[in-house]
Image (cartoon, rainbow, N blue to C red; front, side):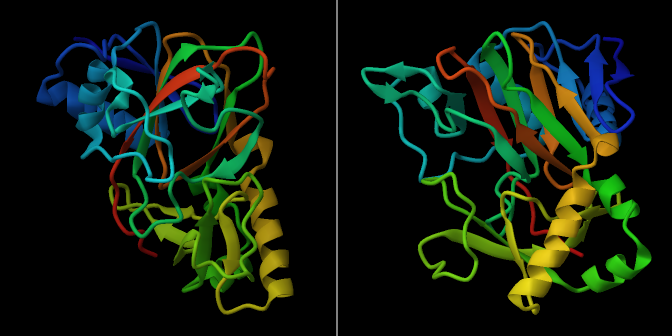
Length: 281
């Protein structure tokens, strides 16, 4: 198997050419895949429609698979009832959604930043797509950190960012309210990637609600500066989905967002995640 990588943008992303994710991989192919993932942050594999079992098997090359968060609804028996699978979909059957996160756009975020050991990787496979929209944008958090003024980097040293997310609502969590019923955890605002050793900004517009040790005004003002800086077009790649696409991204050094799409059109993607580790400064 001869594998090559085609860059998707100047910011991040690489398309894997010559690899069939449905087939078993030897140690050399897995090594090539992981090295490309660490270099490009987001990998795309096109042109293969995968079964649930094939996607789960391929995802194990990136680590131990995670189960879907408890707040997400259980589904009827079938291949996608596996607790390690999340369907991202607006499709309804018998009057209820078959998946999660059905409508609208979503702000930039790191997946599961609100737990103690956020997931290291997310893998999304496109099964049904609307005629337009529903694109996924990825931002390079290495470049976001590298581009910060030195005085802001110094302010972020040893600062913890409180991450909070409520699966039952779409509004951003208010960090000054009682958070006892909402998943939340504080992590360093800038982290060191455990595999590459590079520093990455670890704040995002959807889940980062407060910088610890600052009053509300100081925290809000600095976070808005960081959000704007981390979403600059020059460090973002926008992925326009095609049926059969498989994307694997690194949650430790990238954020992602979703654009809106026609709610009357069907959208179905299958998501699998990989367990991670506690972020370190």
